[in-house]
Amino acid sequence: MVIWPCDPTPVERVRECVCRRPGVGALFRWTIAMHGIPAFMVLIVLALSSGCSERTYRQIGSSMSPTVSSNEVVMVDYSAYATTTPQRWDAVVIRQPDHHLAMGGRASIRRVVGLPGESIKIEHDAVHIGDDRLTPPAGLAAVHYLPGADEDLARTHCSYPYEIPPDAYFVLGDNTTKAWDSRYYGAVALTNILAKVKDK
View: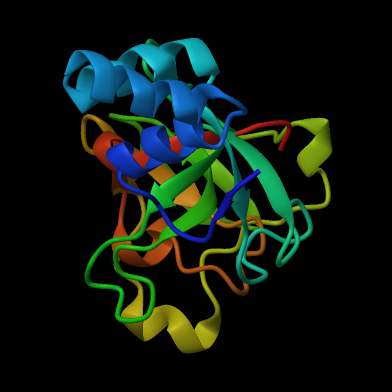
């Protein structure tokens, strides 16, 4: 399996997925050579029949620890949100905002905790939606979501309660002492949520 350290373009995803499958790459090249069929049409047909939506992804850094360790390879599904929307507690691959000097434009794993239109705040090691304290799933019992480290408060983008815009999601790293996430850059647009992480 190919491990993408950052988000590939859609063409790269499909081309690599098609061409790495035994016999399929040769069929792709022969079809174009013999019949003059536009390459993109062949890619689409073969991609749909080759299961290209699932890929591997390597997490860089400890921002999702202990759920996803640094350098851990996970399976992600790029088509998970083709017909549905992210749900609370989904682990997702996002494109970091461009204004992040170190990570701008790169992909990272984060967890969805706030949904479009909700009012969110983080206090007492917990996430609150409106006046309700959220109870994470059992698998996240060891995770404590903090509003931000003291030394980071000066660069905190959000003030609470934070109103999540339509078509945007509030995401956190499971290791909030080491994560650059929505506490600092605000909610992430749906268009910047690239894939769902499986089994996390």
